[in-house]
Length: 254
Image 1 (cartoon, helix red, strand yellow):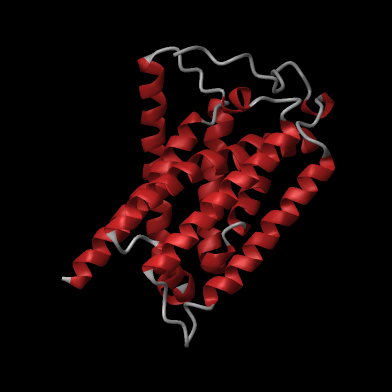
Image 2 (cartoon, rainbow, N blue to C red; image 1 turned 180 degrees about the horizontal axis):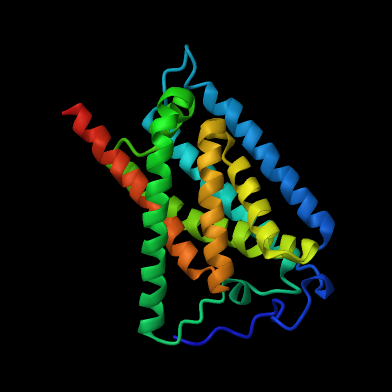
């Protein structure tokens, strides 16, 4: 493995306000509108199969949902990449700094530490969700794999979400907001807000929990100045939640 190229992000001696944005401002405004639009659309479409007359998803519909989400993830990644490619490369944005196996294991260890924090957050909110987020919980239960044939696609989706969403929210939006506001803390909060808003299909209660997850991801990315640990943690969390849901669903059918 090789060292990442020197990042183009501000050094400690440089003022963030004096740094050029990593993409045009209009590009970020359009990005925010896209996220809000997708969130609103996903909310109304998922309520069609979770409402009083909703019958849930068939295996075919679930697979189509996975495929559509995969396309959405990579289209958003492409939009962000095209907006920032002349100023920051993908490699510089991720900034893994993997010079050897020890560096890889370091980031894996950090990722599992992040995962432990996420479990605590989700555990606390699961109590709240039982009484205030029933609809969102039903959506999540419908979207997790129900059949073995869905697991490979879910795995691809989890890996894509870990890479694309971290690149989009922590790599692009957080850095862009830091340069706009001159504050790392403000940037972390802003990206977490839109990360939560982007999951509208789960309902407002779940969105609050996801906002907190976004804060954790943002803090770790800012601390490490790298997306590698959060990409690992994000992808693993999504994959494990799907596998765990599949196992529980299979046990209920026995």
